[in-house]
Image (cartoon, rainbow, N blue to C red; front, side, top):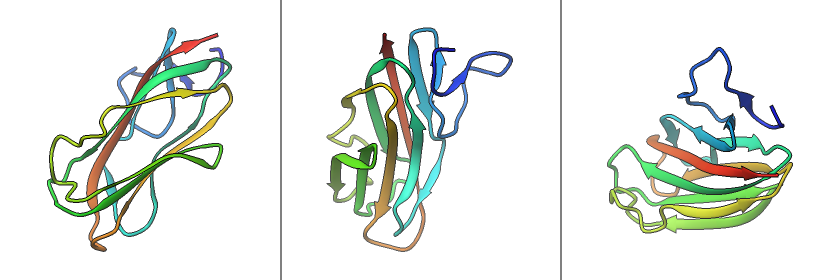
Length: 133
């Protein structure tokens, strides 16, 4: 393994969790269903490895609710993208996918916050990309 995340070894390469997984020169992470409520809720959190990553991030509302959701992407605690989606129940969010370049050894956090209700709503986040050394 060249750094960051889990190597694909004895486990299944199709997995969920907040870690970044390396598969050859490619990376991926799948959050699985995450309940987003009125708190800033982490969907994915990982630190990249030795190379930089050209990636796309996709965030989806899995609940079908029409709540107003604020999404945030941070690199090393700095906001690089923050967007507010009014009526997130729409299935084709206009901001998807989000294209990013992640520098080497960068802590990435993707989070969501429901600004309309305290009821948790199910969301998913995933990232796919290629590593360059």
